Length: 139
Image (tube, rainbow, N blue to C red; front, side, top):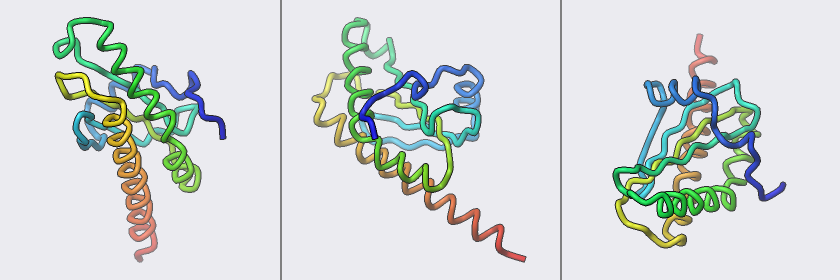
């Protein structure tokens, strides 16, 4: 499996983004990231991501872009476990990563929190799939 981040893996559909932030999505925090995810069927890739860094926290675009690059790189390197779980469950997700801290942190911190976040999403997808199987088998 290639270790890349293709254009199809970037979330750009306005309807999906609006649906994600309007409600119905699930979210959790692993500081300095807030993760919002939503099962969506109309995507080309198994996972499409959106990265957001608030202008209120970082006035300079250089710093905002640096954090976005770090988050995308941490996702790109660690996405394979989540992709294998989603391929097994035949599910597609839209994920938003929102940076919460008002300070720059090392890449190692972002990467470790990204690993935690992706493992948590995989765990919740597996649990949700098991839950739907139990409810559908009841008479």
